Length: 73
Image 1 (tube, rainbow, N blue to C red):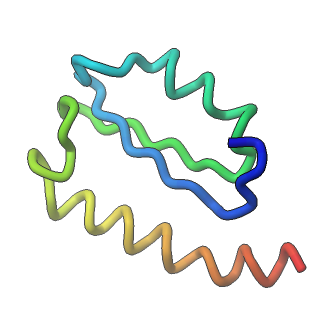
Image 2 (spheres, one colour):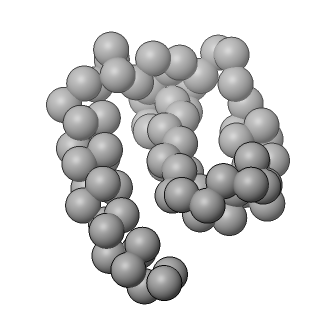
């Protein structure tokens, strides 16, 4: 992960039964351009449990990527 230079979006359900919040937090120092979004009331499969919300979050994230890439140059 330290070699990644692109923005990374991590969506984690608050009730994820497979990955803990500590695991997601451990990624932060390894991927400095990571955006972590914790989703209330959602488990391990946010894209199935709340597809509209996930699409909205991805769209918002992607809409910011060109601006971030330009600023990084």
